[in-house]
Amino acid sequence: MVNPYPYFGYSPKMANYALFKRNRGVHDRYTGITYTNMYDAMLDATYSAMRKLGYGDVGIVVGETGWPSVCDPGQPACSMENAAWFNGNLVRRARQGKGTPLMPNRRFETYLFSLFNENLKPGPTAERNWGLFRPDFSPIYDAGILRNGQVCYDLQNSFFLFTRGA
Image (tube, rainbow, N blue to C red; front, side, top):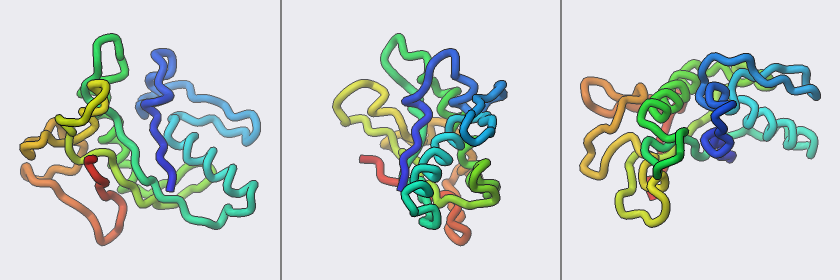
């Protein structure tokens, strides 16, 4: 299991790269690949390290990833728009099963952090605002999992699942 969080690698200069938005990409001089998003680069970096250690045949599961929708002042990465954009693109990518540059056409069992905001969690505001729903079950935004106002799951193909909210 790996927990790739492009949010934690965010910088204003690399915003589009972290958020799955159009950008010039980042060229990896070792593989010759130009990555257009940080998520794929993180998964491929994990795969490269595993392969170098002799574990390239071990499956990778995305244990958790996501983007907070609200933060403390002065944190430009946090917004409902950014969270909806990142998580929405994550859902689309997981459903497509197109993989990464080093692992093409590979499906990754993916767990989104988090299903619910955690209004009682201590710490910075961002720590309480990773969810798609408020504690009262009302949606904060739609990341592509709502159908007629209800959460929809595709467990048959295991492309998108949710993880804990704690």
